[in-house]
Image (tube, rainbow, N blue to C red):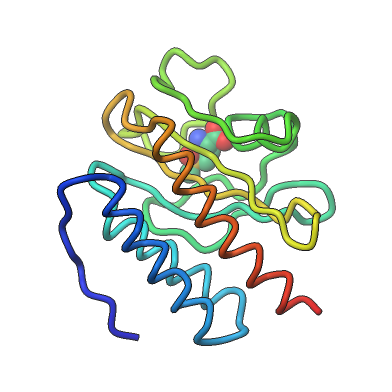
Length: 164
Ligand code: SME
């Protein structure tokens, strides 16, 4: 795998590069951990102003820490708990502008100030979430949501195929 860091002017171009490479990563192997590990590295490498990027995966109704890049994080998150658990309970993405003002936020890295969580569905089932933290407030917006929803779709398609 030869994916170089590239810098772009806009988020849209950055995510186009991320999603193009996420497709390549998913086409390389049917190993789920390998694909999620490389996509977490790709997200951290390309997304400016982030300090944590990775996955929580549904296991027996609970989110369990998956491959990620960043500081060690909480291992188990119940539905409804924290930003990730809220995404599961409400079955929709979450954007938190300022985690310090969010009462239902689980702090893993004191440096984190804003966060985005996007669900991943595989074969119609909630497989897990993409979770990205930023050390700045208000980093994530509708454009991140649209583009990361596409990342989640790429991974969902890959997971639907591999789990068969
Ligand atoms: N902040 C998350 C917990 C995971 S860390 O961001 C890596 C939450 O509130 O669910």
